[in-house]
Length: 449
Ligand SMILES: [Zn+2]
Image (cartoon, rainbow, N blue to C red; front, side):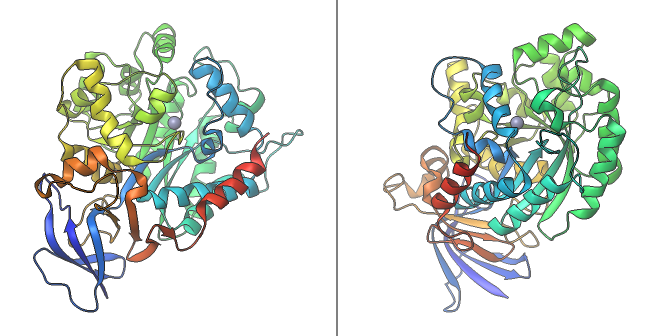
């Protein structure tokens, strides 16, 4: 048993609790008691303690593109060419080193669980061919998350074609594919069995309606449903994706997902940007989580989705740093509200506590860790401390700590991170990886052209 004492802790809702004693047994919270004096043996956490943040959408390798795609003009599709050049160079060793550093950057930012949308399956050798273990790259990500000390949901992603016209995968895209949905399911099943560890779970993903034919979407959804694991997909990120889907099937992407049995409470629609009113009702009515990734969506000129209407319709919200243009879930959380202010001309579409819930419980549900995401007895002992005395948050009104943190905090304000009762970050220092900046520089240098 260990004990932690928090000056302030967010236990849900608009208020924060004072003098909260957190008792940890094994990897769980055995007690969460506000208004308790600090026992001498308890470790003290200054600032505000939150449940561990959950990053519900990540492509770890995109971190190597940060700051390298802003010269000149272009759109999502031009950016994607740069991303493919990088994808073509990654091998298991270099990807594990890179992902370890990226997940360590996430840990420093207070992220205790990440859902990795993994489609980079097969080798980039000029000869083509397959690895002896076709899940070698996925297992490299499992090892990386363990080294960085964060929980991982590895979403094995089905990716079968270049576009809705049925064009085959070619060039770098060829390494994303398994041939057909049955071959994907066979490989994913092996990964499900092979990815061992207390802090790892395997889920499924459909890359997009662009990349997976309707019948195969049903196969992937059936596989996820049978195993009871999360199912994610990119949905309506770009207007062209919606137009192409309508032209090929007569349905919007959300409508096609409804027809193919993809929608349900274990499903997460990533982006959910360009939606009709019917789409919003479909997603909300099925209890699909909408994972909003605002810093990537603005970086790629995707657009601003109807997050407030989705939430009102019944869709839980989650957040993702996706392409890792930045890794800062406070920035993602406030951007959900602030971007919609720009579009609507109104303020206060999302309560600050709801944005914090998207960064914690919403993400935990989406990633298939429903026992994470809250500071409550019986939940996983994943929590983080955010300093309130630094230059960004000094002078915070004690009655408005939640809005101050949501609208003012940054990743650099996270001082301590505990995952399953084990300290991963203390005083802003990653206890396992050490100098994360250096680890990133070395790893990115090794894969950059
Ligand atoms: Zn993505």
